[in-house]
Length: 129
Image (cartoon, rainbow, N blue to C red; front, side, top):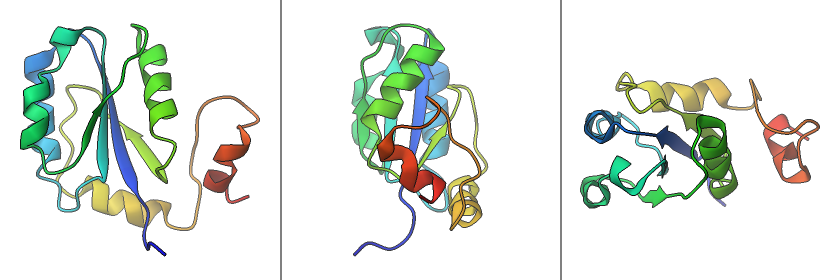
């Protein structure tokens, strides 16, 4: 049986591949790395897939319709196996301890969730049901 919360990071991006590249470098310097990264680019040129091999965690490129809500929904659908999905903007520079502190914050509690309400059955474990 696994211990601890599994965290994934989701980034919906459009038109800023250089800024996204810088964000991913910062994400790779977390004191506790996320288990996976899900990137949903609006266009193929919005994410340099060769950068994925340089990151210390698995990277999943998700296809979705253009637009922040649609891109984030595509990421949610792809990341259902994780306990926590943290969305970052493509220009967000996280503090190096964010992932580690998020695990502690969410341990044993549901502080928020998004999507349809009431949530689909598969989300009930997030709410402690």
